[in-house]
Length: 303
View 1 (tube, rainbow, N blue to C red):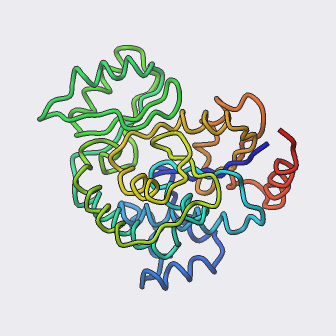
View 2 (view 1 turned 120 degrees about the vertical axis):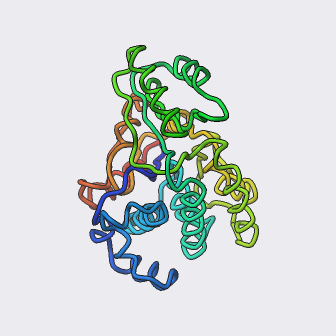
């Protein structure tokens, strides 16, 4: 059977998250960026979209380098796609650092205030889509952004529009409608323009064919072509994330071990709804030798 490493998106960040990681990767990242990356993970610094995204990239790559055995597949939610591409051998860590730095700046500059994302839990997708249609307009833009699970979605848009949808959702029986720690309306058409600017930067970067199975969090299927991967990474900021479909796709391809790279365990909780058999575990809180043993054991299983 197969194994999968997953990399979380914005909202998973934690103050001090880089200080728990091996120094080698932190020194490398600092040299590439020309700044001390350990200054990026303070509570104050993490108010910046650029700092958050760089921290998530660095944490994912640093932790994955501690695993002695490669997985069969990788997948990342939103910014998590970048460390996934690095681990898959398709994008150099150096290029990823420069691209993520630019990505964070572009996203923050596009909507410095008054926009964001809200999670809605407890309603079917079709119900949420109906509520979005009621509220959305030119003056009150709001869109579906993430499909995380059968009854858990994230919307993106202006503060006023999201608040209106949240109130309607609670009226329809939603268990939770919570504003996320994300200051940008990601994964919707509001970010079409910065995505095109990032694509111009991507055109100057060499990408290779992934050496591991790379599952797109937007398309919920493998990408094996370098040019398709370039498009996937550049434009994932303005495309809906189908994380439920991505995890389901992995399970259907024989994945029975999912390890979530730091920080946190949000994706681990989501995967438990899909993995009827097998193991889902987070790197944070687990012993490294346990994770190594799980990877070896999964690699030795016959389908």
